[in-house]
Image 1 (cartoon, helix red, strand yellow):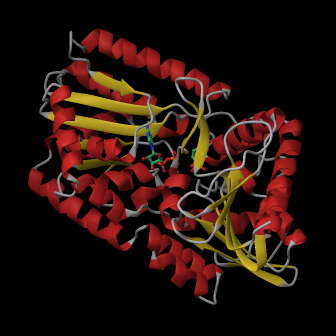
Image 2: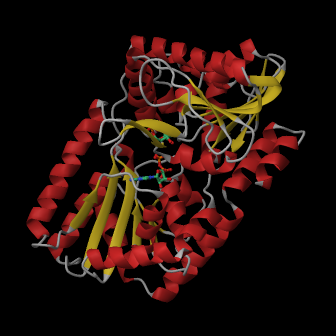
Length: 471
Ligand code: ADP
Ligand code: F6P
């Protein structure tokens, strides 16, 4: 088994198994923010990525992706159901997002979570060279740092949570709360998106495990675990370069024509998830159409909603509700050849996404709760001419950084309607000033800056950081 000095461990590999239209198996980039963040970073770095390839059954052997070794962890049908769909996405995911949907608790799910985490820890122990740096990602794998430390105490272990970490009132609902905290404390450094999350973690560790903790350091056995906020970001220059490409600009012009040359285009790009506030946004839009504040001929809404976690009941119900509502709104307010909402559930390549961002006069990113939200950052990076209004939920991690966005509380329907109107009607000078400031921020705080700050805190020797951030 070949070993690496840097190992990333995430539930998903950066590519996953997808059924092509002719039934053949094809590999494509995995959905979601975690892959968008880490994939550009590791390109051309001698690292191994340990993860699941998307199907069930024996682990497929995958070729290297951009120089990164893929080490697959197999999931059985039961693992998928109980670890990924169950404990990860029907217990932890809703609980960590303000319980906007009811979290479910099942003992079988917890057993699967332990079992699958142990499998990831063992796979990682095999591919990490002596003294390697291991970077474990996200809520699917919270037990891995502890399990890995038991197997390989020589490793330097980091853990980063991409999603919010909830306040004690919510976390305390978890029947196995102590084990989850202990698992995370197997790491040398536990990173969160926001300082509030690190504070919540420290409070819980004090309360549940009775350990000495501040918002920066926790003492456990004879070790100190450091904690902190490291807001994740995007490859800003890559998105900028893509959006500035002549073919992408031409594609954006064509898209605008295809949309009927409206005066204004509003765009939303989400995974189809109840945390993203899609239903609340549709309701606000429908009321604006009803009151005549927004007119179909003037303005169109493009809603990209990429299906996600499709076998989880709450996601199936959400998709039905959204599609019913889009149908109702188009039936009521659209005209022949002029729908009020252009609704798309397809995956797009990066160039097509960049063209969509370029065509959007207003980008509506209004999650009810979101760890970060990289779509908002991608939009800003793609606005190479400093135009465009970003409408952004106060409850997205991004809001703490992009304070020049038009901030909104998506639970407040009247406020949301008002904010959509403000973003549509604001002066070009105002949007330009805001956009310029946000783009400057993303130049400084890009994905490399994120990796540099996290990895230099984790690997005090500094060797890894200089290697990674050189690319
Ligand atoms: P989350 O991690 O919850 O999915 P983020 O906004 O942080 O949310 O990240 C979503 C990522 O998925 C972004 O990089 C975005 O460009 C990408 N994405 C979203 N929808 C699509 C789609 N239809 N096709 C391709 N990529 C998509
Ligand atoms: O950031 C939250 C997250 O679960 C990421 O781990 C992942 O990138 C994204 O959402 C997509 O979710 P899934 O892996 O369930 O398709």
